Image 1: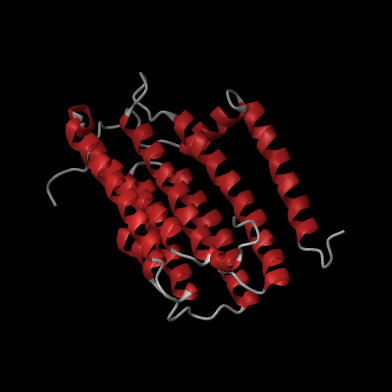
Image 2: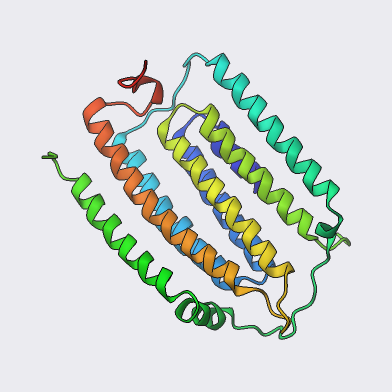
Length: 155
Length: 109
């Protein structure tokens, strides 16, 4: 999965990047399933590998992007990015290696035949009902905004 | 493989995925690839949330579903964000005929 993720960043052609992104999302869904989060895994496949990637590929097709060759490298940006990334990875390694409680093994579930769709849905409609409705309004606003943005001439 | 994955393994994968997404945002100059890097970072956050949910069991011995609800919200918001962002990119491309961030220097000092 990390290889595909690196492919997204380092491949020159936007179409190969998008294909690597699909594979990264699918393998991430597999990781969710190993964590007994079946609902999230299926949502990941449906929303990301399905809808979002179709949008990405559609936009790439629409804009007719060519593979970018021979753009000169921005040395300052690469050095700055390298410094930020190195610091981040070093900090990550320090935290992960320096916190012994993170080495906990996976405890077995009390009920192995879990129906997590029911559990997530129950939490969604009881404890998180207000955020759920706000997200609905957000999606409506996003839909209206996208339609407005895609009109031919903006007034 | 005999060693069962621990929480630290999942968090390491999540952190590295976040680092890759950050590299995409920082190093690439194509605005579409920057967008893909953003998606990778959001997914890395999701992975660590689900890992914590699985390893931090409730008293009943079940995963903590609050984290999974939060992941559900993140996925929803990310989908909306992708739609709006790509619409903005298309509008930008109509006006400027480019997706390179270095060609968009109207606000540069």
